[in-house]
Length: 205
Image 1 (cartoon, rainbow, N blue to C red):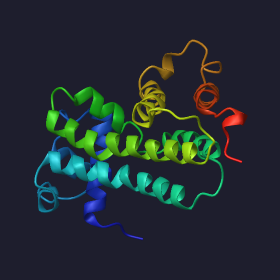
Image 2: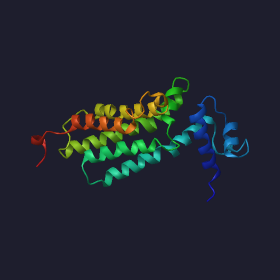
Image 3: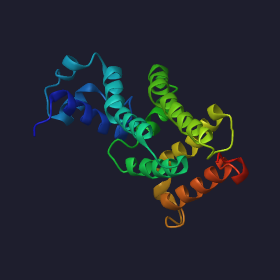
């Protein structure tokens, strides 16, 4: 099935932004990568910043929507949800969209408007999602009472670090097997869930 021209441009831009960086990528490069005329990206996107925003909205935000929809209908425990979420995060890291967070962090000081956009549309939405999970667990008596706003930051940070490591220093690990993402996630979940679990006496009957 043929893709639409805007989708082709967005996909090409995503690949180039991740591989070259935002500053080094020009719209002409994107057009050539997408196999379209040099002027075509300008028909759909005002400028390179607008194209970057489209990349984020198409590549990342649908994943948030899927997670939020799943949480709305999930009937299992909040611990089970967090475990599945962590594994799903690593699966996303294997997709072509992985690497966008590292790109934004690397370019944030040079392109503050893009950093603010990413903060609002991705980072803050992610924190709100973790906050919902924590509130759910507390209300069900599964998690002990915590400051959900701060705990959401604490839970999100190690996953962000895993993504950065995966796209920077991972190839240079002296013992890749011992530092696998799977063992990292096991340790992460063990630490987070041990800290969140309510004592049996505190559980709602």
